[in-house]
Length: 221
Image (spheres, rainbow, N blue to C red):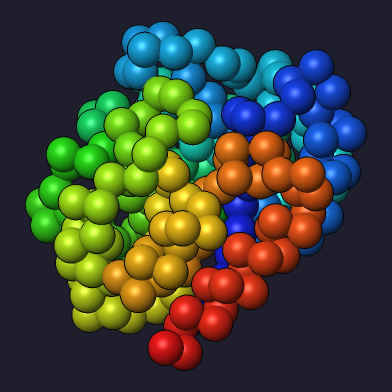
């Protein structure tokens, strides 16, 4: 099980994303939060922006769709060249069909869950997925504090993934920092979205490397 750090550009300088992405060469993927002011109470950017980012970087893109009508819109992000596309199961009418379509288009298929959404009803869907994203804050805004009450859910999800086998990543998103990443690792997460912790640091790439080293060390404890 590898450790992956996927910085969210939500807390970066959106006026110069090419420069901001270039500042984090040690990141494993670049996390892009797409919000529509319907599924969540915030509006960020959509497919045209992602297409521009794709043209400006060869770094792998990790798209997190916090949008309504996700079955309709998610395939377009895979077609745009995103390496990973995450849809919220709460917004999907046909999550298995969507996951299979994303894979067919060449993207890793990922399913996200809000904090109050249990993982157990979706256990049978896991073989259709390449990653599960657990929100550790309420989705919609960056800079929120990590919800410790999500740690048992991370543990239960890890147990389900281990029972199914295969290489399904377990990503956590929300409040990940040097103060919280050890707890997430011990609960079973292996992939970490870090936004404000990275882009508010004096040296964003040094923070990416520090978080990764800390998480790798935590695995041995």
